[in-house]
Amino acid sequence: MGYKGRRLKNFLIDREFQFRYAGQMAVVSAGLTGMLGFIIYRFNAEASRVVDVRAMDPTDADAQVLKEAFARSGFHLLLALIGFGVVLSVVLALWQIVTTHKVAGPLYYIAHQARRIRDGYLGPLHPLRKGDMLHDFFENFREMHHALRERARSEAEIYGRLAASVEKAGDPESAEELRTLQKEREEALKK
Image (cartoon, rainbow, N blue to C red; front, side, top):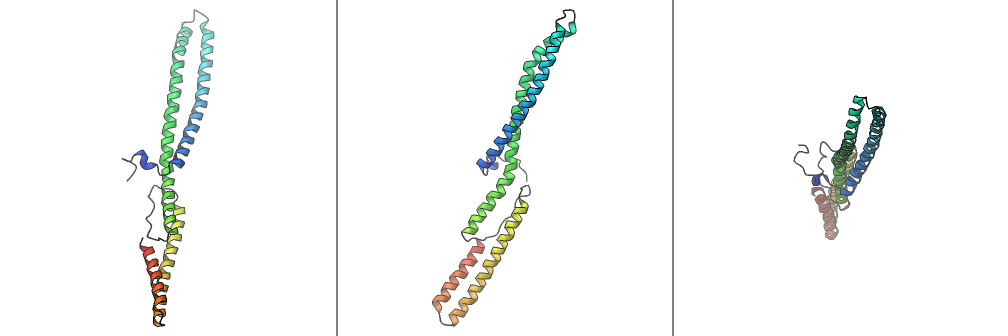
C-alpha cells in the first residue's frame, strides 16, 4: 500500500517540523532558481544587445528579424523562469512533506510509546511501515521495550512467588499487596 489516495493532511504528523523543512526547501529552490534565472536572463539580454548593435545596419534583414524576436521573447523568458521557479518550489516543498512524514511518523510513534512506558504500559509494539525511515533507531527502541517487558514479566512471577511465601508465613495483608503488584505488572504487559 503506497501513498495513493492519501490526503495532504494525512502526511502532516508534526506540522511545525514538516512545514519548517518544506518551507526551507521552497526558499532554497526559489533562491537557486532565481539565481539561475538571473544568469539566463542576463545572457539573453547580452545576446539581445549584440543583435541590437548588428541591427543598426538597416540592410541586415536577419538582424532586424532577430531584434524583433528578442524583443518578444524577453517577456516570455521572464514568465517561463518565474513559472518554473514557482512549480519547482511547490513540488519540492510537497516532496519534503512526504519525506519528513517518513521521519515524523516513526518519531511520533516512538514518543507515544515512550509516554506509555513512562505511565507503566508495556503492551506490544507494532513494526514501522516499510517506507518509514529510522528503522535502525526503532530497532534499538524495540530491544529496550522488549527488555522492559521481560523485566516486568519476571517481576510479576517474583511477586507471585513472594505472595505465596508471605501468605504461608502468616501475613495475608502483605501477600495481598504483593499480589496487587503482580497484577499491575501483568496488566502493564497487556496494554
